[in-house]
Image (tube, rainbow, N blue to C red; front, side, top):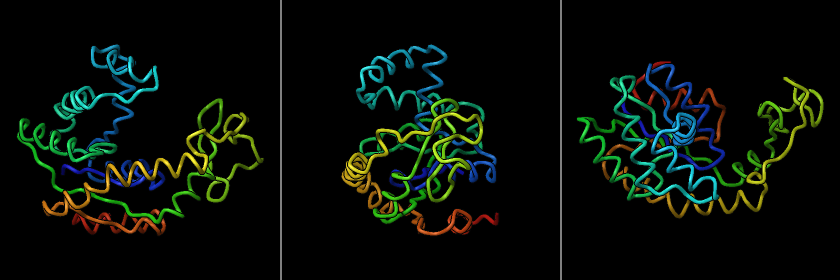
Length: 216
């Protein structure tokens, strides 16, 4: 089953994609992981992407899509995949469709996790990360045993710059402007599955399973 997973920052796409991937026996593919893997391996595309990332610039679509194309052609994607982080725009969606057609594939479903903006802000503002081991906590939903200290290694917890309220609101505005048109785009194609993300993780996953015709 070939799936694109959509949702705004703070919707918990990564966590849900991991569970979905295990249940469907397909890889969870995130653009961030692809960038890191290519940069670590020193591939030509990775070196090119790193030139932009190291300057704080966005990686051009043609580089990102070339990496995606290579990844989707790997053997573990033969029975499907869950793509998280792309497409973000209509242009990328068109390019993804062309890549899949070239590989004899097509999307089966686009899962959109819908979460109210005020809840997203609360979720992201409360996130804390360990400076040493990168373990993630949340002040309300998953607090550390000792305030400001990581349970795993005792390292200092900090709030990432992109988790400040001002930055979060800007990220959400960018998402709404760039990615929300994709909802109508995929709805017109009959591929969209919208899920209420304002409920427990288990209930969200159950709703996704039902929408995909899976009993997990």
